[in-house]
Image (cartoon, rainbow, N blue to C red; front, side, top):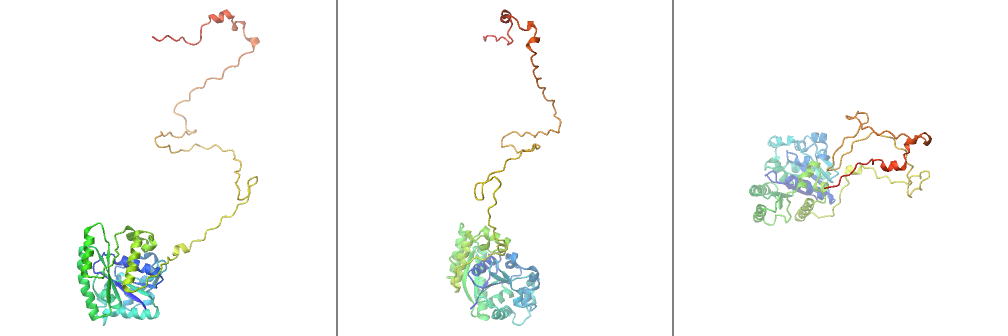
Length: 377
């Protein structure tokens, strides 16, 4: 038996599409066959998984063409193996569907009839419908086609006001179109627990719809906002983050309230990881001549005489003066200091004149070559 759920709130920006994407991804990891239907002309759910969507196929087969009878329901379903779900993508042309389908007989139950015929051929366990942020014909089609309603509510004042109007619409659909429609779950989203406003709105919600507000909340998280830009759910993008833990708790609580069995989750093998080649084991290299055998300590070969190379510039350490390298091809700005000539070798003793060897009494009288040092005063 399949479970069909519509996620709806006529106020935009409450985290509805993010909740649909991650709830579907989590239940897909639990082994359920999950089908996502993007019924929003903005196609945010489709764009959330943009990395796995075939754009050419989406142009030909989408939920708009299904509702118009231009495409079979099965042709519009695209699998997303990296998230273990399937999706019926949306298109911007869906914005004209309410006007184009307005004259159709039974226009409020078009999606119900098409979805029912499709599920007879392709049984899915769970169907999640992302409704547009309005209470028009598309939202009525979603409410008439599903079994349960999940209402995400942002913890702010205006979102609280819209909930009262949504309650009247659900009761109207239940009384005229779908008596079996159930509304059992309200999920507080984008909660900032540091503020009094968030806690006050949740208390007001519990007073207006007692027994429907989940115990677990979804807080504002950067990782949740980053995941759609990578085309992934929070479980594929940051599965070990606190944001992923919050979504796991919310998904399991929604399942318990609706009557879906909570199963152990299994992470999928991503397509980009499956294409990777297995690592090659390192093999022992043959021993070098005169070196150690394979597996032992290698003996480095004798170093060859280094060829002279031109000096290269090296970054000086912090705090040191930088000196440009010396280029031998550039002439120096100053002539190099002349070096002292090599001493002339002494002539043989036979050629030294007699006067070169003064007597001892003349050596004593010879003046000293070192200058005299004056006594300090």
